[in-house]
Length: 127
Image (tube, rainbow, N blue to C red):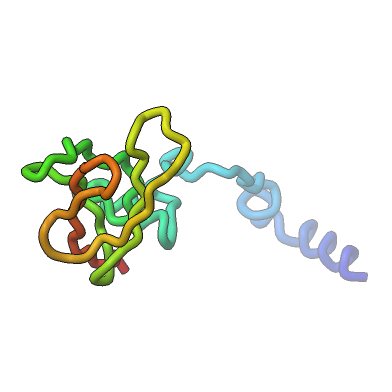
């Protein structure tokens, strides 16, 4: 029944044929500007991270950390949201045993096995 009514309306109104009914529908995944970039379609945490990278920040420690010498003047920096943190040190490059020790806020502390220096710094969460 509805199909017959539609056909009658189509035959009765020739102006509709040229403008509405015969115009093809655009069905594509792209917009007028093209395919959206990662930055345009990112949402939530991914969007916040991309915006921070544009500003030169690394809020979630995604990038490789800076290399420190491990001396008293240039200790390894350990970020923490508290006042102490458990740190593991691989004293030698080929060593399979990890030396664990507590690192407290304040001055740089030494690894009990190899003598590398570590310093705890306060780190604010990005959100």
